[in-house]
Image 1 (cartoon, helix red, strand yellow):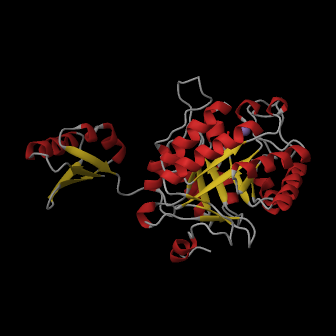
Image 2 (tube, helix red, strand yellow):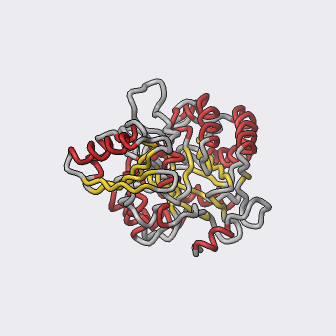
Image 3 (cartoon, rainbow, N blue to C red):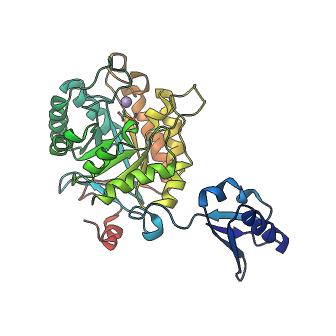
Length: 362
Ligand code: PEP
Ligand code: MN
């Protein structure tokens, strides 16, 4: 860990940091730079965290130098990555300088419902379709998804609309089937730490959207991405979907801070799910605009042609009437942040491929 002192820090401030570190058996090395003093710490980083050094007088900030993840770390890969999703000729980018909307039903229920939801997604400006065929439900009595026939519906709707599909995989044994039907695999919050599933999707050869575990720290989440990368799949998009807190007014608490923090630690793109965060359709717009303002690379949003009859997560699904309002708000904040909408290959949007090529990614 490195402690960066403020330009105004006194020698006594620096000495106090050194003493506090030495008191718990750590070593501290002071280097005086041109404008700042830096204190390098050697010892147990977890113990140093408990010392609350950033709160001490004269301290500007602390940096953990050796991150426990490597392949997905920004430290070793300063340019942020773009992940391309979809079949050749209509691949959609997710990454810096562009902005990708993904929308669709929480669960695939029928062909008609999925097609109508995909049309709603397009009205919202989405360039990708979401929809669950395998649903990881908290209650064993709740609708568990259509399984393989849901995958077939998604593949057909994708073909008709031209929207690449992201869908959840919950068991390692289903990865092959999901790869066959979908363009991107989703690992949900309940499976973020299912290491055998992470390793299996690491072999999938298709991009993965990794949702943050509802009780996972940002570091644990990025470590989960490292599992996928370690098996050879660097096409991973992080998705912040809210975490468990003491608050009960929302389904989860959207951790807006996770967006810049994860972007600082990892080169992977990060998108936000305002639907599963807030759990209410009226929260989708404020959480979406907050996410864009905080630098998110995209959004994944639940829509349903008839939320009252939805078999899963109806209260958070947008209705047809909500779409235009949200797309205007999103456009305005996106413009303020100078983020252009993601276009499929051949479109006129920004070209993150230039950066991608320089990173040596396909
Ligand atoms: C979903 O996106 O359908 C889903 C189940 O999300 P999460 O894993 O974030 O709860
Ligand atoms: Mn859901």
